[in-house]
Length: 207
Image 1 (cartoon, rainbow, N blue to C red):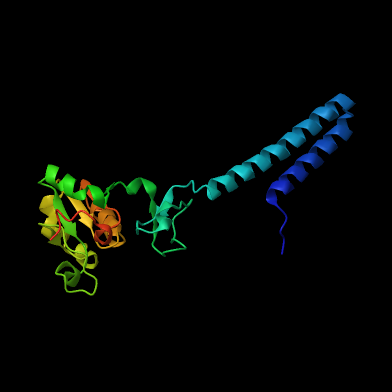
Image 2: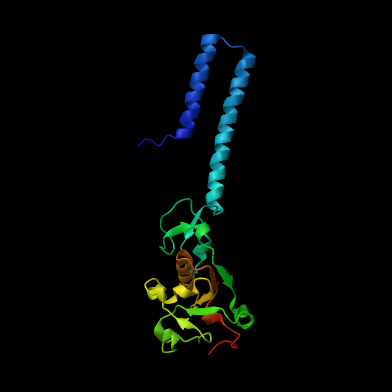
């Protein structure tokens, strides 16, 4: 299998070409020094480019991220579409992840100051009704559409597209996915509650 670096191959071809030109035209030692200097510059430039590309990947600089899932891999970046190697969610353009975030510690105060905000619980019906094994309570006046049903039930909430909507679940794994889905379908003011109901300490707005 040929593993010769194509970049090195380019340098090699350049050097051979220059060598033949020098022989044919009998260039001076000064000219030879200039050619060698240029050759070394090409090598250094190529190495710098490779290092920049490597640094770009290492620092997570890229146009893609995984479809928000609430895990650490939400912070990773990639250069092209595909699947996240950690959560297996598809990779989406960073520019499409535009929903806002709100902390559970701020949620009750925010709702009090913004009484027209819609509260969307995307957990299962049993979780919403407190029948599941783990029950973390529900934000008062919430509506419930499980994330698994959200896309097909969008017509039920089309009249809310211009409303501010806070989306939440138990651990903020499902709510980021729901928030992204809503943004993609033209909902303009989506806020995801980070952490979810499992970390709620202020019970003033919880039933």
